[in-house]
Length: 113
Length: 256
Image (tube, rainbow over all chains, first blue to last red; front, top):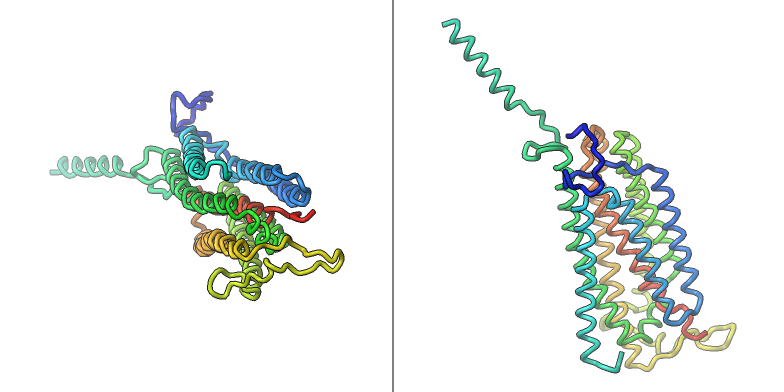
């Protein structure tokens, strides 16, 4: 346990180090409010006919909510670079798998999508 | 002789001191620092959650593909789901996650009774979610909208007439497309079912954690089990944040 707090934003001197940050209940309340607002907008937006934009908006709001949950409820904003990279790598790999599988399906039924 | 005895004692004392190590659960002897142990635990938990992303990801991909292939069936079947109950469940689950987050905070600041309270509230809202899910599922069984030999496509081929407009409430589907609503309901039960299984596992773990929290295990600086369970619970929340719009809100206005 180092008692000396050197300003080291890039975690160069101690790559494992991440300040043990405690997220306050006030922050959690703000996040809670934002998530409820997102849910409300999702339901209201679904009742407006926006054609192809409907699923785009729905997924956009859901992704925003997910990012808020990951950053604050799951404390990733306050974790070390290792954890941030791990989380990012997981979602990136998932997107790569979706893209490659989908492009396979789409190219086999060309013109029908 | 005296000297020897003294020497032995000194030696023993030295050895004792060297190996003297207060073994705290938050600092096991094979970790250099508490910080390192914490980091390793969080890292391991996230690796597990990444496998969960891939697991649910497969279901989401199947959904994406079939939704594009049988879009009309997916719209008609999706509009059988109760948006109001789905939205209420979303709010309940967000609330449950909120109390779980507060529980982690209570453990960090070592407030035992608050931690127990927040864990109990998390559990209660988890049960509320499953209760509403039960109501939704039983309606599907009553209407024969569970895929299988007893599946009933009549409501999709001949949608009920809306009393106000005199028009069908949904776009009527051809019988072959109406059969594809079974694909939607299969995915609906698979995805919400796997989500519910995760919640049931979570509630079992919550009972265990609440009992340990009550006996004071997590109010003296050892918060890893609470923190890592929190990560799991929030992950299950995130899955629902995507399931709700994708299953309930595909197209709310097919005839407008």
